[in-house]
Length: 498
Ligand SMILES: NC(=O)c1ccc[n+]([C@@H]2O[C@H](COP(=O)([O-])OP(=O)(O)OC[C@H]3O[C@@H](n4cnc5c(N)ncnc54)[C@H](O)[C@@H]3O)[C@@H](O)[C@H]2O)c1
Ligand SMILES: O=P(O)(O)OC[C@@H](O)[C@@H](O)[C@H](O)[C@H](O)CO
Image (cartoon, rainbow, N blue to C red; front, side, top):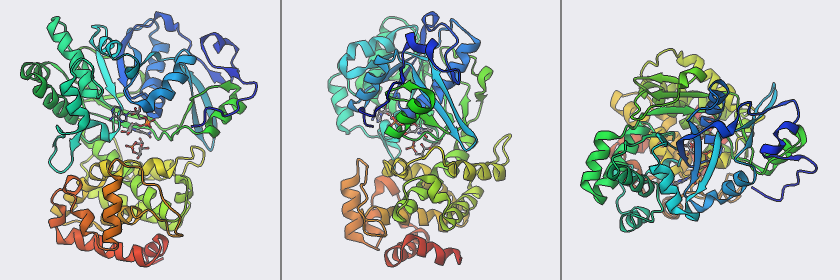
């Protein structure tokens, strides 16, 4: 994002300027100074600000003087921009919900403090160790969990993990901070907090539990046991399409709403949060603001990840190969739109019934949401860190389909489209930047294998034993040959017989 974006004479956003904002902007109608923080959120990006913080902003309008305010926290250098923007704006920011029906802006006040951990690691540990903190929520991306896909085990050899084991009082990674704070709480006879992962991982709470306790066991087995016994890790399904903020969004907020906001966020109107009701130190009355609390999140997570996020990958690769930039442009392409429909149909038999949800309606709504032209969701955002996402979004359904003897044509086509994308050139020969911590090896294997997928399928940390399935390998091979011979759209025209 370009911090030099001109915002003209728009009003600089901060607490003092709230009363001067235009009438078409909803502002916090509660006293932020009466709020105490009960939640630390690690990974304040676009999504947290468009989703959880909005739910809590709604909650604070109903429950002024609450003790569930949010202290935001960033662990990476990446978060410097968020630190600077939020600090200059009293942690306020503008959320714009965009749809063809119009744009609605509101200023969110739910984050009352922001800590950039590299500035002061002790302050970050203290905030987490403070008994007032009763929930720690996370949006640290799929890669942030240090989970080895093929084995499901903890990536104990990762340099961040090794560093944190050697520097328990000056950590850099999420488990280092959580463990330092939990150790202090245990030592002081205090209760622990709940860890609520809000990332797109099936069984996100289970994964957070397994990884954090594995780390804690390595640091101190007694602490590991205490965490296993005392800390709750609810699973949850989160949903709201939130593109990365662009300079055009900053300009739009200034021009349409007269707000000079260094880091607004835009999102679609749709919003959903289904949370397993398993907290060890209390929680806000989230039901009051539309959060669905349940005993079993699993069917909701499967539905969302296997339909929405898997479709996003197919849209990302095919759209990029065909030279598009935004998701709505891809959805206007009848070939790709049909392929997305077909992928969702193929995935459906791998899903369990979802209480209260008609899957046909859900799929129709997804197509409409993807086609929203106002949010301008970026294809590179969907393709980011694919090595961590492909196993979670697609390969689980693929394994189930193989076991059930079900169709897997469009799932293996998604894998083939990824492999073709990984050679770094679109169908017109333009270069594609591959943004992935594994990009070096992925691109090398994509280039050496060409239309032969076997080198990439041999990455067991991504594919596990899937390369043993001749049905899957043959299907990927056929599609990949076609994608190398023809363009992505021509390949689809052939498959779809349009
Ligand atoms: N954007 C969406 O539409 C959306 C919707 C549902 C769920 N999510 C979930 O939220 C995550 C974040 O999305 P976003 O749009 O806010 O992205 P973002 O790029 O705006 O923010 C990502 C945040 O994650 C942090 N992070 C990344 N790797 C980390 C690591 N190894 N350790 C600690 N922190 C780390 C970054 O520092 C940053 O604060 C996604 O990966 C996904 O799991 C996003
Ligand atoms: O955020 P990621 O990287 O896990 O996945 C990219 C998108 O599929 C995702 O952000 C969706 O927009 C989101 O899951 C919708 O709720």
